[in-house]
Image (cartoon, rainbow, N blue to C red; front, side, top):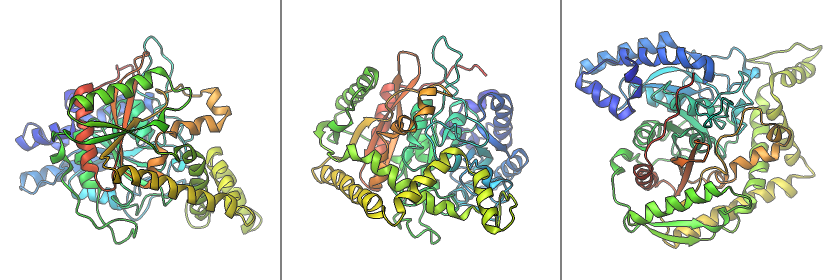
Length: 493
């Protein structure tokens, strides 16, 4: 049975279609894997074993009746940011204690409609605010990877750390995640998995707890490029309940895999060669360039001159939107309520006790930059910078570039409780240096494992694409994956 969890989504789908095993058997194998691994890794904050077995049983019945969906019987983990009807949905925050929504997010509803099975809710940084999965009310997630010769616990990246760790540790076949400034691609790079942030508007945001509404986007984390393509096909849709979702046909992303990249123009932005970048990141980038050149792609140098302003602008726009979005958590209708002598004190006490330090920090920053005397100086200026960043990419694409290749992260995974990062939030924010531009411009970006650093830890490369051209990213990422091979952590748990 344990071998079943080693199958990719594509392999499990094909084997179940042949009748080799049932969804109930596959689901039981994953539930056993969660029971064994979760105490050490802390990827799941809620395991829905009974619901999973019910869904698997119904799935087997549909397959027997000849009405199998695209993800029939595939067990998935769901990031705790997604509303799941009648099931723990707390964005890993104390302020949402006990919240079980009476509705289902559009993305998860799409997955269940295609036959997928829910294993449970995955740990994450509180309200998706973090780059290490250490801000969760439920404690940090531990990366399944360890440096060679070391027992030190490493972070899996954030905010979708639970999603990435669960996929890497074979605790689900794939997982939903979200990306506001790198929260799919950075954890994917840290755990040797594949993560894609699709174009803004490709997936509905309805039923996903909002962090920064103009930046947030749903996407999958999976073991390989093919699985990510299969998951995104089911997740993506237009939605009347989300006016930012785009009414465009959803392509068969899996069909794009194996296509030639001959003649594709791959841009290499000089601005991503940041000061102090480790030698192994530069070497990995050069290796990626060589692989794509060998596959027939044309490599061109490009300029994205406003890249250096992306991180400061992002850390004005995102907290500003967060301070507005998180105003609704007040202890009145749902979640935590801390009594006070009047309603104002009840608000204050509930929010003071309910939100963690990082969330409070971002609410304070956001409220400050939106305040009367500073709105023009900060928020308005940051939005203008955002327009310039978007224009940089548009000019590159207008010049014929099909995709842009960059590193995914400035380093491999770092230690849990790293004092240097804990004492300086700005250093933690720098983990998103290669990823935030993509959110600011609303573009699709994919992180694909490309190698190991000298400590034996995974490193990823990022491909950035034109709006709604995820097929090009999947095709190009598949070429890198074929050249690099796949990476798995050695089991220690």
